[in-house]
Image (tube, rainbow, N blue to C red; front, side):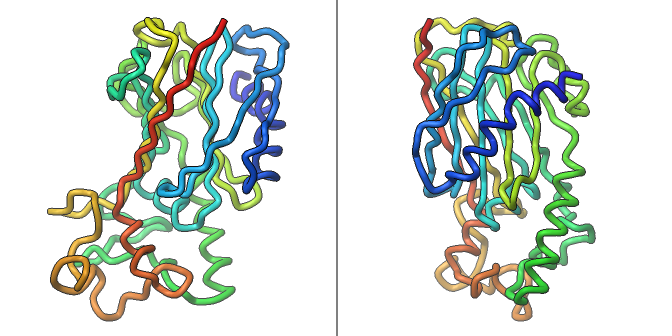
Length: 270
């Protein structure tokens, strides 16, 4: 029931943001009812982060924080679904990672999207190739399947949080959702202030969005291991590996391994 109310409460905002995905125009939605908020409208201003190729919007009322993330970039969608995303809330307005939501959770280290083990060199997912229309259709199918499997999340630092992976329908206090809307990966979270271990002590709260990159042994997260400008030796996958869609650009390849971090400060108002 809570999930149904959540989806209906945010559907208007989601559709508007997707339709204006290349705009920074003001977006207005009604506050969801399930957190006991008023009927007044809230104003969301989507912000685009170039490094993460991610749109995000944050707002609040007197009951909760509302966080919306939208990713249209094909490579970034795969990164988030494969390696996971973290959402952190610092009520002191800093950048502490003590209270947060790990969702979606990353796949096992030796598994790639769509199934199958990575090769000994840590080769890329089977759809990381420039195979034309057929490849794009296969990729869309894999992404849809992955989104459907992303049902578990881990809460850190919240009131009554177990710190263990749980189905998102069983989470206490917070409400989260992940869906694919017109080829855009859409993430929504409602975080009631009552679920936080501490109430905001200041007028500013920090929201951290972390989109993880591929993890390989000996790799620190700033770029891929090996390969000429990458630092000696061929990139994972050997000579037969094809680059990411769009011609195998080395910048795109490096993006697969990078950890994208966004910190946003929102000023609370009464």
